[in-house]
Structure formats: structure tokens, C-alpha cells
Amino acid sequence: MKIKFSSSEKLLLFSLAGAKFTHIMDFMVLMPLGPQLMRVLDISAKEFGVLVSSYTFSAGATVLASAFFIDRLDRKKALLWTYAGFWLGTLACGLVNSYETLVLARILTGLFGGLLNALVLSLIGDVFSLEKRASAMGVVMAAFSAAAAFGVPFGIYMASMGNWRWPFLILALASLPVLIGLWYFIPNLESKEEGPKAPALSIIQRTFSNPNQLRALGMTLLLVLGQFMIIPYISPFMVGNIGFSEIQLVYIYLCGGLLTLFTGPAIGRLADKKGHKNIFVTFAILSILPLLLITHLPDYGIPFALLASSLFFILISGRIIPSTTMVVSSVERKYRAGFMSLNTAMQQLAAGMAALISGNIVVEIAQKNTDVVAIGNYNYLGYLAVGLTFLAIFLGRKIVPLKEAE
Image (cartoon, rainbow, N blue to C red; front, side, top):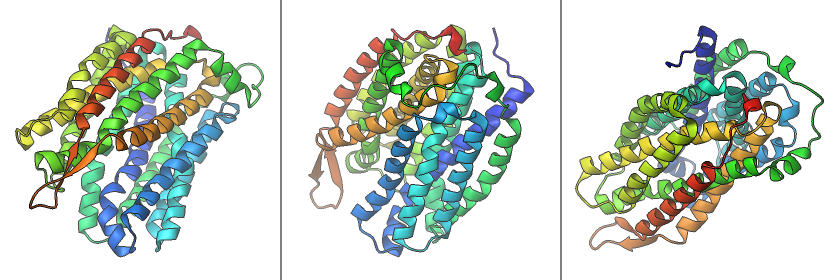
């Protein structure tokens, strides 16, 4: 049966995808601005790392704290206020003129940006029935692919224009119509809530006494842990081991992002037709190929490397879409926003753990007669990611979607 969305559902999805796109773009454009920020603001590589991590830590702390109260709030109002705060933070990033104030602006952006993901995913679960949920998830996740495809090239282009503030100012301007769309197209869901509001601290007891929800959180942790041990070192590996120039790294994100822009919605529709769990298991198994290929990549030239990285993008996103749908569907609607905040916090924790683990495994190998540094022991990360994938499949097969979660 073909999955069809009504006009109101399409407009809602477009608005949510816009929120996701601007949110991810804000994070992606900072990376290629690093060299210019270090030069203009006279900061070290370590200080730039603090600038990047200030957003992540701020976002992680916020989503963890929000898990205790977010289910007590109206979904629409919560998302509107959160997105407005995100817009203010992005605008501030484009108006500041010192390193210290830019760090504060990134912290402000993270405070609100961290909540966006949980609220957007919760709204998809609230509005769309189980039969349409993966298709809707695929559309919104395509915004992530678009941001990956255009965020880095956009940042590099803006950096070449000589003004690091422009990306943030342009994003702030683009976010205004998205905010209007969210206000206009998100339905009022407050009247659908049933029963008294649960105590703020009950989410911990409720989640940790529910094996189904624990399996969902565990699957999230394992998948993200495996992916983020690989992803941060793709660019250094491509430069140091394969021979990419720094400007050629744009092709990795451009090719992978554009391809998943089309494959993401298709995978979502397939998951709704064939079953979320079946498609997750299928793509999780298929993803083992690029996990091993990327981490054992022979120097067959840039075209072959782009083929491998594009396959990585497609199959990794192919397992994210159905697995996220499974997580959303594992919890009752009235508790969903708080649970998805916990899930987002789990993602942040897994990403941090992955960086710590991978950083202690990979080694830098100096090349003779060149400043290029190759990456060693990358293959071990591939083996770990494969093992974590099998564990995630084991947990994922045991997750039961709740009828009342529809």
C-alpha cells in the first residue's frame, strides 16, 4: 500500500524538516570556519575545540535536564519557544566580535538546539500513525542529509569570502520563515493529553523499570557509539592515507548528503511497508560492509574513496531511520517527549564515549618528506563498530512497538 500524506501533514513535515535543516546547518558550518576563526580571533586549536564542544556540552546538559519536565509542557509551545531561543543564539553568533562572546553565544545556541531534536522526533510520533511514522521520519531525516551536503561547502565558501559571521546571519534570516511555519502548521496537541501530569522525577523510575524502553536506549547507545568512533576520523584518514586535499573533502559530504537526500525518504517508505524492525536489521547488516571498507580503505584513488564514503552515508542513514522510528514507538505518547530527551542525551553520551575510545586507539603516523600525517589503527575501530552493530541488532529485535504509542 502506498503511503500518502495529507496536505496538512506535508506542510507540517516541511516545517519540521526546515527546523532540522537549520539546526544541523548551524552545527555543520562551524567546522570549516576553524582556520579563519583561529586566525581572526587569534585562538589556538585547543581553544577552537572548546568552542565546538561548548555547544555539545550545553546541548547535552539541557536535554538531560529537560527529560524531567518536558512532558508537562504543551508540545507546540515548547517547540516554538525552543526554536525562537535557537534563532536568538544563531543570530548572536553572527553579531559577536570576540572569542569569549562567541563561546557564550554557542552555549546559548546549544541550550535550545539540544532540545530541538527530541521535540521534533516527539511531534512526529504524536502526529503520524505507526503506519506512516517511518516515512515521515525519512522526510525529516533528509534535512540532515541536505545540511551535511550543503553545510560544509557553504561554510568553506563563506570562509573564502573572508567573513565568518555571514553563515550565522544568513541562517538566522532563513530561520524566521521556519519559525512562522512551525507556529502555523503544528496542530495543538494539548487537548489530546489524558490524565494528570506525571511527577517530574517519575521518568527515571518509569524508564529504568521498563525493559522495552531500556532496550531502545541501549540500541541507540550502541549504534551511535559505533558510528562516532568512525566518523570523526574519516576526513583525517582521507587526507593522510588516501591523498585528498582539504578542499576535496567537500566532495565526501556533497556526494553522501545528496544521495541520502533521496534514499532517506525511500527507506522510510520501505520501512512502513515491510516493517520497521525488518528494515532496521537488513540495513544494520548491510552497514557492516562500509564500516569495514572505510576503515580498511585501500589507496585506489579518490573516485573509489568517494564510492566507499557514499555507501557509508547511505547505509548508516538506512539503519538510523527505522531504528529511530522503533525508539519513538516504544513509549506511550504522553511520556514521549521526556523519553526522547533521554534518548538524545544518550546520543550525546555515546558520541563523547566514542571520541574518548577512538582517540586512545588511533595513532598518527608521520610521512617522510611531507607534513601530511597518516592515521593508523583505524581498522580496529571498524572491528569494534561491527561488534557494536551486532549487539544493537540483538537489542533491536527485542523492541516491541506499543499500540498505545500510535
